Image 1 (cartoon, rainbow, N blue to C red):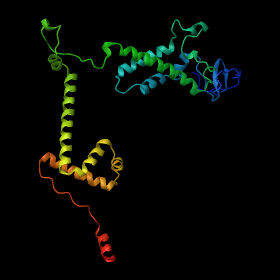
Image 2: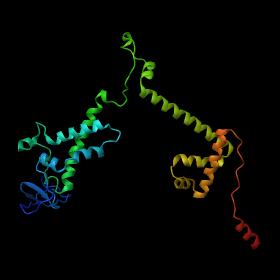
Image 3: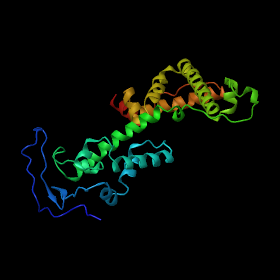
Image 4: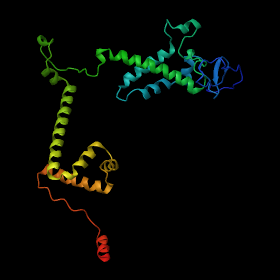
Length: 274
């Protein structure tokens, strides 16, 4: 197995013919038929050498760039498809005229302005990303793979096998049942929240702004900043909201709000000054 670094001693390459003037090219050498970057990284000669040195690279790349909700079986299939993509060039590829058989062999340090590890793996990542987009696009065009599909289970008469109305679908599809339950819970929550907002507005409208700030932000400091008050002041408003919430749920009478507490020391000092 080839190491990632090698002695840079053979065939230095000059970049005087690089056409892109805005991109600074990194020097590299060629040792034993392999490109060696200025950082000592040895570019794999072909896919077999790449896979031998980095056997988990494609698998880790897929896990990093694919959503966690994707089933494990799909991630495994995509990993194998991407490995095949790197291993075999298309029959009509122009690179086959130069005797190249896989994607790794098509890496050209002259076009990519160097042969260090960053430039090589960036090229591999671009190739993997383009292929993964093609796989996803092809998958989305397949009706069988649509996420909205539901499976129907149960027994029904063979005479009605060609028909499936809404009642049948909802009765035999767990997906539709869960979806309807979630929608019903959301509607009930929205209705209850609207009623509580009206209750707060009627009983103590001074804390209605705190209720809106809580809905808009998820942090105590952020809500206090939105209201332009201190953290202590916001905590007092939040406590009042909790008190109103208990009254809203139990139906008991809302108690009067306490006046802001003033320290006795401040009162005593003011009386002494007088």
